[in-house]
Length: 94
Image (tube, rainbow, N blue to C red):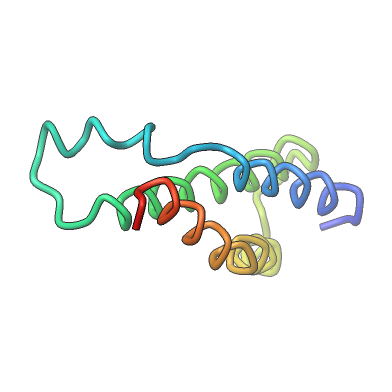
């Protein structure tokens, strides 16, 4: 992955940390039993971040991401997990 693409993805992933997540998934608990709204919200935003990064990379390169690219994306998301979890817990008031 080239540095320009990495920088673009990194900056956009940071934007996910600034948005409310719980409101996007609260409706689910009204439809089916869930054991943790926190974990659902966390999984939701992780999936959004990974999907965004993969789609952005594929759009820019017109190629399927390599194993190295996928690992780099996982690491980008992994670095943001503590702040992401903290933000979700703050939204939930826990």
